[in-house]
Length: 314
Image (tube, rainbow, N blue to C red; front, side):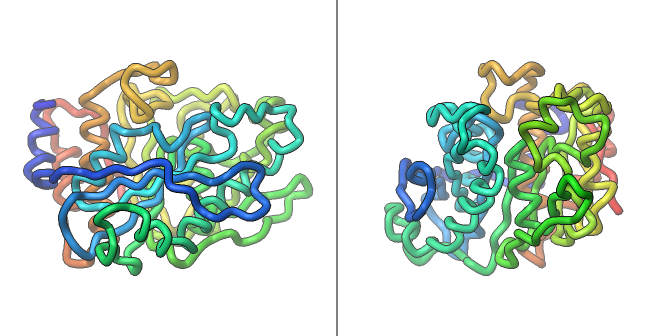
């Protein structure tokens, strides 16, 4: 991909390095309906590597989202991806008695990963002694974004209007929410109300530094609200510092789960390339205090003569 904006961002991000990816790695998960497995992708060289947990969207697994996860790993992150219980490979349908608690199990999957970094480090060839556990971020797409926002401080409002328990994890220093669903209410469709209790978030408690990414053509089947629904995390949380809006992007944001999969209704390799680079600079800026690449990347996007999107900052 060599459009002017991608070229400009490449100059800011820098070259990548080879990546080693290992899967499946089993982790301890007592009481979980099925074993917990993860994929670990890391640069082949380098020390003091920041850690990035990634939570997939509904139905996916640790084998998805390679356009993002492989790129992040090539730019210096140790990327850890669990397969959550809602993965299609597990065949847990909406009427399965295990389904109603999957949203909380997803959050537990992420904390289990953080609790078992020693196991991951020992099991992934060549990784021992190379991770910086003081620099941890989390990213997620769609349902995965809900999972991550809970780690960052967002809470779920119950049917009586009470704000639920705090499921945040102080080990996670920054976050990235991709196509995160917004607040609940009468605009939710009956299916969403019946099956997705987490679609009633309270963002007031989300205080960790967070980048929100949305598409201005993302019309959810779960809500009668328009694409602005996916910007609520930015509008309503004190921690969300920046919002990237991609013009013409739908829910897959150009193909982040994969370029040719059924969910990619708006395939755009250029959009994915820009997203790769923008998110890398944001995460670097939050985890590496001396890094100022996000400011440069943000300016490059907003000043592009052929804009693909824009960034606003609080």
